[in-house]
Image 1 (cartoon, rainbow, N blue to C red):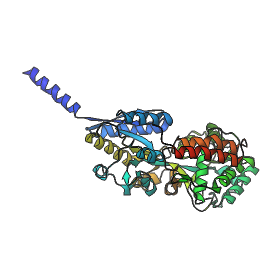
Image 2 (tube, helix red, strand yellow):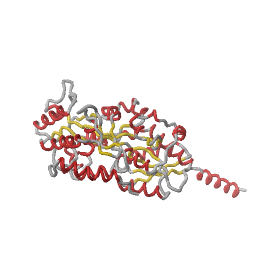
Image 3 (cartoon, rainbow, N blue to C red):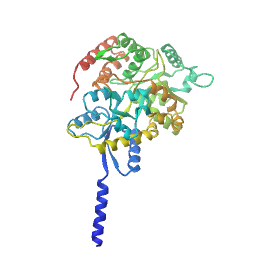
Image 4 (cartoon, one colour):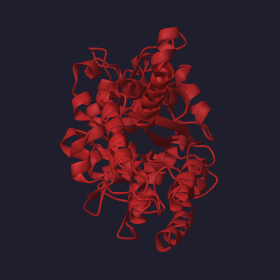
Length: 424
């Protein structure tokens, strides 16, 4: 009798264990972002007994996207994945992603009105929703208040005087240079992506665009805008051939008045101030309005459901995946610790986030003015179009290639990409 009861108990435990639905989730998040995502995964797994997220992290960029794409094509992809929204149009068109039905979103308590409008708009393609945005990580302007004070750029209240034009910005750079400091630090060495991001933002601020309907549309703004960026180096406001670590070090070590970079460096500043490594007063503001509007380059991490070929979607896995997404959205304050702006308005407007410095100083304005890379299979984070710009724009900025020649070479590559079909 005892043996029978024991057998029944073991059977019950086995049945209970088999009832748990495992969600295979892939991302490309390392470092601090990886730790914060693991915190969300662990929190969800402990919060309920029905679903368990099994997380796999792959190398950032091309290795990750290649793996997700090829695995999904043979029905071996994950149930849930992270995607940069800048890549969504190409992936949706190629049917690498599965649309997420309104009823499926509603079942997890998710709806579009919960998110910043531009982010939710970027999560759709051809009238269908394909993603749930977790954040936006825009390009912003970091500034050293101590250097700006020496340069006469702080008001009587100790705050940075508003910059509302490119002329104002260049005047500020010249004033900083007179103090003996570097005017601005930004990555511009070979294969750098930051020149592309600045170029895209400044063209958008002038009412232009990069591409529409498979045609390059920036016109003369392409050359004039790259000339503007190049002049920062020509005039001695910025250093030549600055790689990414050096661009950050110049600012963190108090050698530059400004730094153009993404919000992902906010933890560097926050942690540096706490440990005493950063010995100056700093601020972070949205990328300034230098022309007609305040557009800024940005990207977003978003959750997507890969369309695993030949493998019908499992309703239980979809439900569990979206419940985890809802949990991550609700607890996105954890994610905001990486400098990211929460995509979810409930979190972005919460008292706890508004107390988070310096995030709150740039969050709302930046999120309302995000400008993503052009749509297309060739575009987006670590995509071929960005790579084409990185071949030529840094060379022009550093005086190794005439600006008009750099634009011409970029256009040749870009037109080939636009007219070609996506690689499998």
